[in-house]
Length: 275
Image (cartoon, rainbow, N blue to C red; front, side):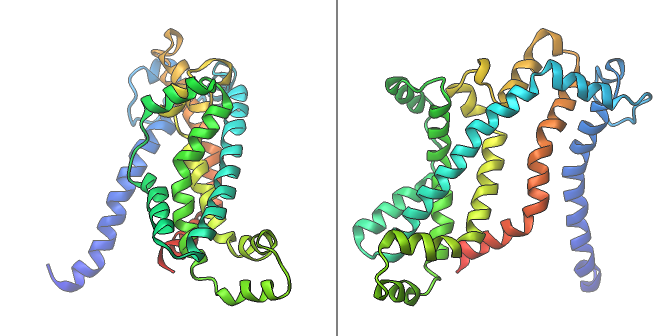
């Protein structure tokens, strides 16, 4: 293979493989969600003989209690994002501006969550001891602890690139640390804040593993947990068209968020990790 062919063929090959890896499952979900039950008993890539996406999506929303699941997801994800941003920005400011062995050790401990998976059994036992098992505050605390490391990592790298002269000038004008943080640091952190917001929302919105152990279902079930419940119920064992319709509707909010803010995700990651 000549260098010229390899030069232009390699990107085309990568795009083709990525398209197959993403496109085939996506096509399977979309076409199955539009098929009648008789055609969707064995999911395949065939085009539906009879299209009925409207009724499938309507049944998935009503029978799957998606409105309640959507509200439950918002009540858990939004407070988690707010806490991750506030705590992460405050901690990152300290880690970026202070130099000592104790601070370095604390920073290493905080970002260790990027590599070490949370211990589910320990989390559940601690929540039970605190009386937070099966509650939204308990789920918010779990998400905040899980994703705080990511927020601190990106924000610390970004703050280190902010000139100290800005803060020193504010101190000479009589500004206290809270005012400096709110008026100078936070406005400059907007790219990384946008990135952290989107990443935490994507992770928490689609989480089912930790929600299953912490919430356990019931009236507080989030969208992914509710999907698991209805998909494993007797009514949905052969209703793949409704299961995939549920998946499509559940994914639409986060897909929209990602498409709108994908540039901010890339810029925030490079700003926080490279600068």
